[in-house]
Length: 355
Image (cartoon, rainbow, N blue to C red; front, side):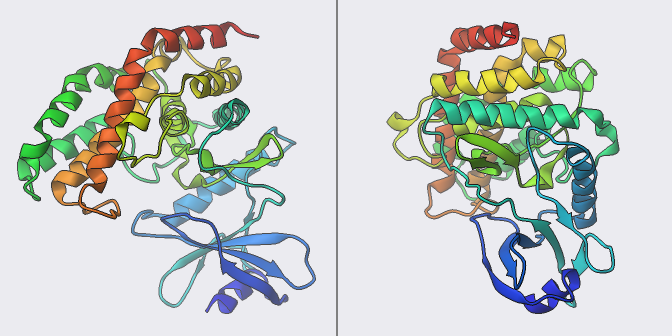
């Protein structure tokens, strides 16, 4: 099967080695080498249960690489490899969609930030990515997953989960619900500013986990996993990166004493990110950057909570409390961020002033 698929992209060459690669949870990924060629490639089967429009994914990628490969850029992306017929996707006999990209050699990923330079490089790389994408009109891009980061949509999902109480868990989470509901109106202000046009839509990555960067030595060299790229706001990338990379513990850590907001990582990431985007950021955007990590942590918290109320039907779980543990980690992070609000504002203000 795989050999037949590879032939669609490289009809005249023989496979040297092909094996599953990476730890992604959505698409099925293989690393490919060919006889007689030094470079390697990535073959992916797109999960159409998550990404309903695979053609849209590769069209977005193609548009990006037309910008990223026009001239040398400080940050790189993988390059799409068309089939021998010139198409960007191959559809097999089962209706599955496959794509091929280049493999970025001599690179590595990290799962958690351990040193400040990693946070600084991550901020600079993700900021550089969105700055380069500033050439695009966000309205000309489709959302890969509709309403992915839209707070009102996630609140609606939570309210429906509360009303249905499908797993009979409502009584045990009332205090947690009160915590999130008490913060709902403040964070909704950001969405209102977007809808009013005061915070602009831009082409952003929309999934800025630290393991969506490739490093070479002590330098971030590439942004990967481009399937979520599309319309969004700077806060989505900035906030979600900090939600994950500035946490002192894992997303599902059961011991909440281990969870704090790492201000050193926050400061390093912020300096790197704002150095790249401050030339394009408007006054409303700079005013509310401090709320962005809280916004994205809130969104993930209520998504985990809604899934717990629904009986764990969306996220994979390893035990009965798994989604609740995830939700409580987000809650603890929000509390930690709130306790450092003035410090966060000061870091952002200084980063915006630095040349």
